[in-house]
Length: 274
Image (tube, rainbow, N blue to C red):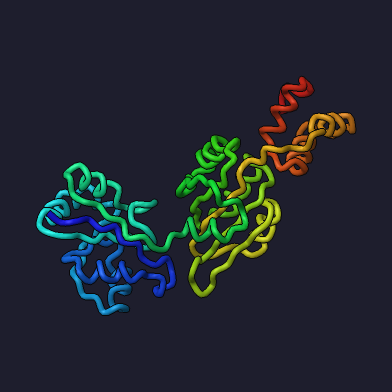
């Protein structure tokens, strides 16, 4: 019986491969790869010539049985297109099946986009919640963000560059004007961090739309709100502002979500319907 090795590969810069990962890739009789062309570039860089078999989202179920049979004969290295296999990439089904069969599963740590983005974000790193890829549909994306609105831990998500502006608008709407960090093209030549409040970053990205792979880090809910929040709420209401303007103004000032402020309005019985 062999061992299933989960080998982390570079997320951009090919120099980020570890010595242990290179040894495992040289010794494994077979490498299962999410993108064989991308993996071959890495192997060629380090003069590794082991055979490859494709293992990606659309053939994952069909390949598990075959790969389990190979594991009965010897070791197998699993790699994703970039980063750690089975983390927002194919691999979970094979890992679970191997464990169920009593086959050893050994992680070979290495580059990770969520961890790299979090570490350099400037936001709290002691606790965080990784949400994977944000939903494509606006309604589903907002529902997910709404479900973590009260989460005090830092949030880490993946997003495509062409949906990033829309997602930041949803963050602003559902979570309030929190601090965020947009990490783009991590470890690559054009690596970039855009940091600031959601409103500020959104304005900058509208002027200069992002390109490349993006990891978004979002500040968790700030537990301490201004002590005079209710007083400020009443001041805004008494000033003659519409309920919508009250919500927008106070959400921006307090760093709270519009929904949270709207609930305060309802609790105060100052508004029944927006």
